[in-house]
Length: 464
Image (cartoon, rainbow, N blue to C red; front, side):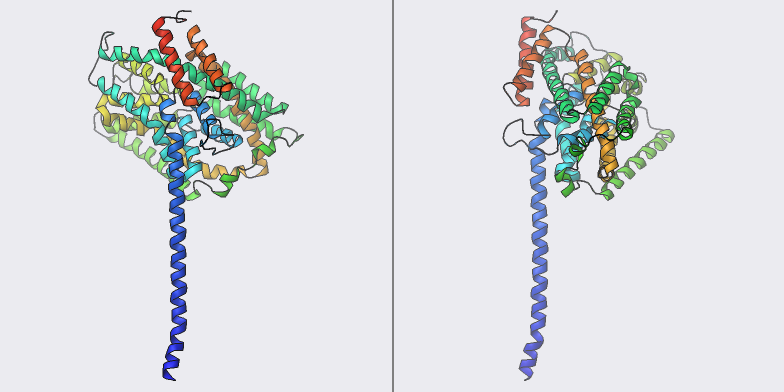
């Protein structure tokens, strides 16, 4: 009897042990599945973003066009290309980034990477897109380290002249993608809705006519006005509201939690305030790493819209303070325009000229981190707002205004990227490669660069 009692007393304990083991095994399986899913998502970000850093010529607008073709809507770049966000969601993210200070194209790519693989995916996307251009400008900038004046016969000047031969074709090819993106996204966003087409037209009209110096407040104002016009207009049709419906993939997996977003905003605020206080009381030299980081953090926190807008800000922080020679600064500006990546890479060039490769890293972190922290911090709060019916109506107007900004970018980009008949011919050819022959964008960009090199070498269409 005692043995039977002992056996009975053991049975529940064995069952409990077995049950707890099953729970532990189940937890291990879930953890392993989450880890596998995370690794798979990060690998997808790697595969999707690494080519963009090599072909992202042409600055902000061209990079946004590349992102649209590669990550939004249907597959256009061949089998295996990830389709991560719908075109309406892409436009919402684009409008959000245009309303924030910082490199808007890089912020948009960070948001797309985060939509795919969370915070780590966003960081990896920024790293992959930024790395090739950063390494190139750091290498060239280090060549200028300690140089007070650039002679036209110097090694640096000869290098820049050689690279600019291909640069004309690369930039013209990038412009063809901007033109295609502006057309396709305006048609698909506004459809046959007259009010939204009018908002897009008004947005483009205002931005094209306004001076560049107004971009800091004009872009956010235009986007806000588009949303308000749509919001207060009579509700005559629900056609476009359906296109603003929540993205299924984003609804199933909010990429960044509210807690993570709040932490990002807190870090942004703390670093900004701390830098201002420390820089004010510091006795370090004005060319020290502290002042390099503080100066470029200030630029990254104040510049809206990216692109050419960043030039006067960096010039005011660096060249006017005589940190580097004026002609060296202008050579750097010419260089970043013919290299892949955002024009914010000018910060890396300036940092390399002042303090070598480490200076380039400090300057890049200073100018890029504020905008990235802001977009990571606001994404979860923006996502909560977009789910309401009022927000959907407002976002329809925001998206129409954003489409107008892309249309305005055609004119703004055209002035800088099509200086002669050769570049115009390259643009038409590359546009045909994209729309008629459906060639992958990376190949189109590289062929444009090759064609530009040949036409420059043969002096065909250069002076006309």
